Image (cartoon, rainbow, N blue to C red):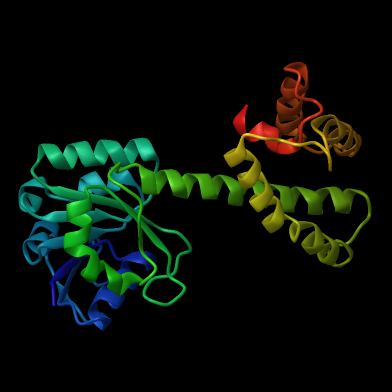
Length: 276
């Protein structure tokens, strides 16, 4: 089995080390704060360079890309492979890949989509040189059999991740804002919750519909138009403002709707906004 080094023992780093060790890979770990890996089935290195030297494959998962640069030793990594599961932006991933290439380091960027490592629900994405991914694919499978390679562009995994996080966090702002507006209208969380889940249940089919429209470059407004969306949004924003609540997110959306109408797309379906 291939020896593996894990740099960083936060919750995700610990999960990574545990998964590699459980799969039979001799695992070396290092953490900036000593003592965190004492309970792991792994060898604890005194320095990051010592940990890197123990394995041909180093996996890092820390707070951000700045922390990655402060942890990894380019001299120790030369001729080895670094898999960065820290997350970040596509730009940061490409910059990190360029830095690695300058130092003779093979580099893969990756993301853990749902915070699960080592089980059947684990979903990981990787991007970077295909030959590097293929060389370590069997070892990385310890983190989850559902790992997906997305291509040579090292920023592609991060691109997927930030697009999905855009959906998640925009939705979460909508959730908390809806409860705040409901409270202002004397509606309790218990009263709203079931109806909110019914409303959210529309999203999976709508995601499929928007994807279909964008792929076909056809945005029919037979079910609902951008003009009708504008009228609904005006009612919501009016209520939000009447209750003295923040309308920033909704107003930004309403402005995007108005730009589409002004550009002559008012009779198109709402999915038209995905390409404007």
